[in-house]
Length: 191
Image (cartoon, rainbow, N blue to C red):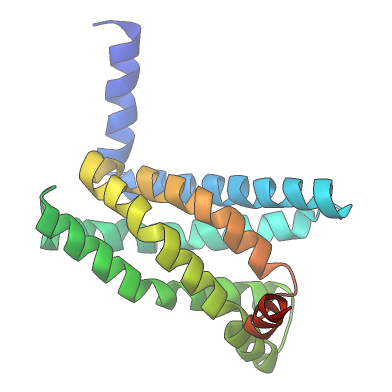
C-alpha cells in the first residue's frame, strides 16, 4: 500500500470511526476561523479596518460549538433520506434550507453573549441581519448542498458542509460584524 493510500485510509477513518464527531467538531471550528479570517482580510484590505482577534476567537468558538449539532443533523438527514438520487438530494436540501434559519439563533445569540450585549440588542440584530443571512442562504446554499449530498459520501458530509460554510461563512462573518440592516440595503437600491 502506497503512502498516499495509507494517508487516505487514515483520513477516512477520522470521519468514520468512533471519534467522527470530534473530528467534525474540530473541522467546523478550523473552517469557521478560516471563513472569518478571509472576511477580515478583505475588510482590512478594503476598509483599512484593524484585525479583530476577539472576533476570530468568537467565530471559532461558535463554529466549534455548532460542530456536534451539524454532525448529528447531517447524520439524521443521510439516514432519513439515504442515497444520491434526485429525490433524496432534493429532500435533504429542502429540509436543510427550511431548518437553516434556526442556526442563526446560536450564531447571533453567541456573538451577542461574547460582546456582552443585551437581549434587546440580540433581537434588533436578529431582525436586521437574519433576513440578509437567509437570502444569502437561499441564493447559494441549495446549489452548494446539492453538490455536497450528490458527490460526497455521508462520512465526508461535514467536510462538504464546512467547505460550503467557508464560502458562505465569509459573507456571514462580514454581515454579522458590520452595521447591516434590510432597511439600509433597500435604501441603497432605491438610489
